Structures are given as structure tokens and as C-alpha cells.
Image 1 (cartoon, rainbow, N blue to C red):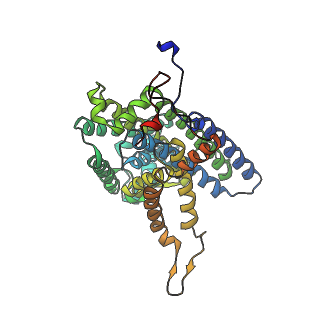
Image 2 (image 1 turned 30 degrees about the vertical axis):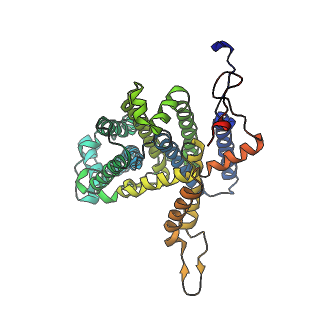
Image 3 (image 1 turned 180 degrees about the vertical axis):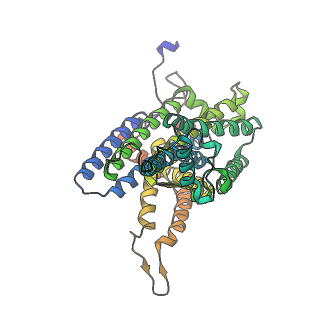
Length: 415
């Protein structure tokens, strides 16, 4: 039998082929619903911002799933790229807002302010909190939105490229690589806590919710605009990663995850594939951070701490790694539930001898959930989608091992 006569079979279940379209349609319907409810004043502006931030976290989780669930690299430092993206856009937001305030104050003087006086006033307003008025070198491009948007991509991308090249060329794998990524994040966090870094130390960047150039826009309008921007970014990011993990590229990434030595023996340059996945996901995570922090209104070094990257891994594990929609579901579910518990929405439990305050016990509950999912449901929440789809399809029809009609079937080879 020739190749042309071979029946075309697909070993991928229908949910894998249609999941992208279903996810995008659901995301679009969700965005329209939130917009309608917000326009009718049925949900608050703060809740719209929460939903927008949750979509940004979902994008970061999808990126994490590509590097961990598909490539097998458990990165415990991806939220560092998230924070760097936030710092990059936050510098422009803070500069532009401060420039407008300083220019307005100086306009009342008898003589128009010189560029030097304006710059000195901006420096005093931004860095006075750390006892300085000098503008650091890293703020050289803060006045330009296009340049700072480029920094959103370049800074996380270059850091991931350099770190990944050094780690992968040394063939560091497994838990050692995870420790290295966590060490990178810890070093970056400790560096940002210093006042002489030029990023205001532990004070961070604040007032990011005020968008320069739109003085008449209300926070309700701004929240909807960022919500749609977050939804669009998630949709485009999902499409990008769905393309990356499909076809030959996806097959190689999964093969690297399952048996790196065999892939290298077959002639593939494993380090290049790992570096590609690590760098691309870092860039997308940085973009997610750039959309997140204008909605949060503030960013500080605590956002880059290693615990944030561990949370990201927990979201992916709960959602189901190796499934893009699972990672998004996990991030959205855990983020919203976390906000409900930590904001006082969940009623405390009075056991008589002890009162459980969920604001204090939420992390314990999250840890227990992670352990239970890992032990009892390794496919996570995304596995529920697979289960529901398989029940609708009925018994699975699996292809034979070979093209001949009498070839051995998978069920016959199962032990």
C-alpha cells in the first residue's frame, strides 16, 4: 500500500482540534457580557478591573503552560518577566503624569520654565521619596511611549535569552534549572528593593491607573478599555501558542519534554527549541504584565518575588498542564476564588474552639488544593473538559499501529 493510499487519521481528540475556536468564542462572549453589564451599572468599576487583571494572569499562565506543560521546563521565575513588563510601562505612565503636574505648577510662574527646570521638577516629584532628585540613566526613554513599549518586549526577552542561553548550553535540566530560575527571580527582586536602582526601591511605581492624555476619561471608561485590551491580548496570545504547539514544532517540544536525550540523538538541536520557547513565553508574559499593572495602579518589588512565580505554576497545575485552555481556566478560577477569600467575601467559620479566618487560611487551602489535584487529578480542571467531550463522543476509535488492515491495535498492545 502506497503512502497516497493510506487513510488519513488523526490521533488528536476533537477537543484538541476545536478547543482554540471554542476558547476564542467563549472569550468574546465573556467580553461582550462584561461590557453590557458594566454599561448598565450592574458590576462595579473595581470588578471590571479585577476581571481585566485576571485575563492578564490567564495569558501569563498560558505562556507558562507552553514552557512547562509542553516543553518540560518548570520555570519558577516567569513572573519576573511579568513584573519587568509592568515596570517598563509604569515608567512612562509615571513620567507622563508627573510631567503634566509639574508643567501645570510651573506655568503659574512669571517666566516660562526651561527644559532643565521641568526635568528637575519631574525628578524631585518622582524620586523625592528616596531622597533624590536626579533622574537615573534607566529613565532615559521614559518620556517616549513607543520606546517604553519596545522595552516591554526587549527587557524580558533579552533577560530570558541570556539566561536561557547560559543555562541550556550548560545542559542544566530538571530541578536544578527550576532552582536557577528561582534564584534569578530572587536576585532581581532583591535588586529592585534597593533605593539606588532608580525604580524607587520598595515604594515602587504608583498612580499607574491615571492614563496621560485622557483627562476627561473616567475610571469606568479606562477600566473597560483595558479589559478589552487584556481580552484581545489573551486571544492573540492563545492563537500564537496554539500555532506554536501544533505541527512539527509542537511535536518536537513535547518530545523534548518526554525524552530530551532521544531527541538530541535524532539530530535536533534541543537547546535552540528550549531557548525559543523560554524566550517567546517570557516576551508574552512581559506584555501581560504591561497590561496588568495599569489596572492594578501600582507595582513594587514584591510583585517580582519568587512566590509569585510559584503561584503561576500552581495555577497551571490546577488547570491542567499540557492544555492551553486548562492553564487559562486554572488561572481565572484560582484568581477569582483567591480574591473572594482574601477580600473578605468568604464568611469566617466559627468552630467554637477556633475561628477560621479565610484571609489568613487561604494560602493553606490553595496548597492543599494543589496537592490534591496533583495526586488525584493530574489533568486538573482541564481534564473535566476532556471527560465531558469523551462522554459526548462515546467510545474512542483509535488508529492502528500500522497501515495494514490487520495491524495491531492500541487496545491489543495495552498491558
